[in-house]
Length: 139
Image (cartoon, rainbow, N blue to C red; front, side, top):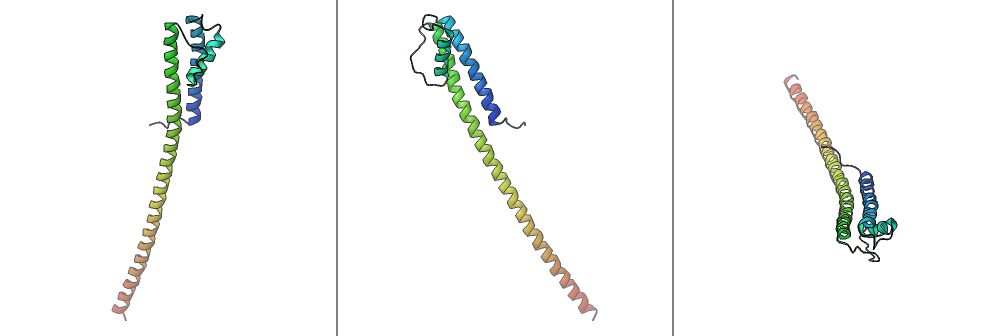
């Protein structure tokens, strides 16, 4: 399984996609609802407000086709917030999991060292006992 992308890469992708949606939606709103949107910049202003879920309401689509574009932009805005939240959350979860694994590995290494030391002590004691028994047999 591949490593998940960094938050920076995910944020870059999200911001790029959102910027494209704002530009395309601004142009579309000018084309489909030109009575309400005097120029492309008004359309982009509306799209930026909508995609960021601010929605001042100073410009709203009146034509059905404009409302369809608006629905898409609203859904993209909600997805934008959800993806940003998920990206940040997944980063925190991954870091916490890495810390848990590191702590577990450290605990295992410490336990291995403790057992090695105990086995070494037991081996020394066994050597001493063996030496004592050998000395008793050969006085």
